[in-house]
Length: 263
Image 1 (tube, rainbow, N blue to C red):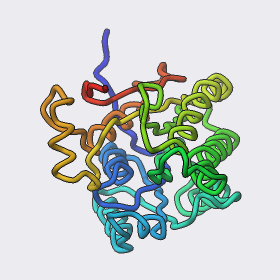
Image 2: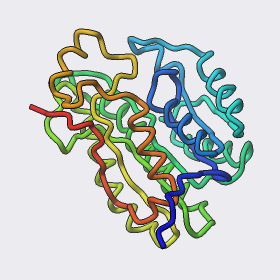
Image 3: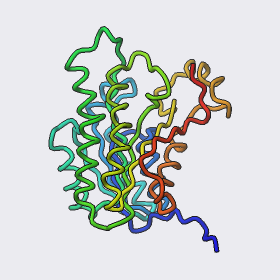
């Protein structure tokens, strides 16, 4: 007899990196996982946002924690620079200290600076590598080392469709995010015996507050559904992948772009 789908995450603890902005994908993921009953621990780093066009707002992290707690779940947070070599240990130690052992890890934090290929240098590449690949890899393997439940572990990495076609003006970002896709497949095979699935997801062009109205109008004809991507689109997919219903999905790179037409 078929059983109804169960997306409940009650009793689970989820770690989400890079949830610093109210309109961001990380924040949407936190809200969606909390709506399914998961306790949430999120990281953020305001100095990075301060260098971006949208700027930094320290209050948004406080507001997010309060909002999630109002939903009836526990919530912890930590502001730190994930490019620090030992940041992955600091994150997981803080999660265990504040909430307990996590069973869900969402590697959402990223570093992205637009540049032409002739501007590439070691400093630029290393800055992208430290967040996009090294932090993701070290958090993932340390999460797997500490995981003890035997089943139900979830690692979900965010990519940006590097394998779908060229992304001009983002060579360092592309190189490091493409490496995450490759790592996802191999890590999935290694940690499966521990009951952990590993997948990567690509949200496609998503309006997290960085899109100008001019850019939206330029992109709209390439979305057959008549709208650009929104953070909640990715959050819903991640909530599914974090659930028990997704226990047979691992080592995959899932492109959830609303039919976005490239070229």
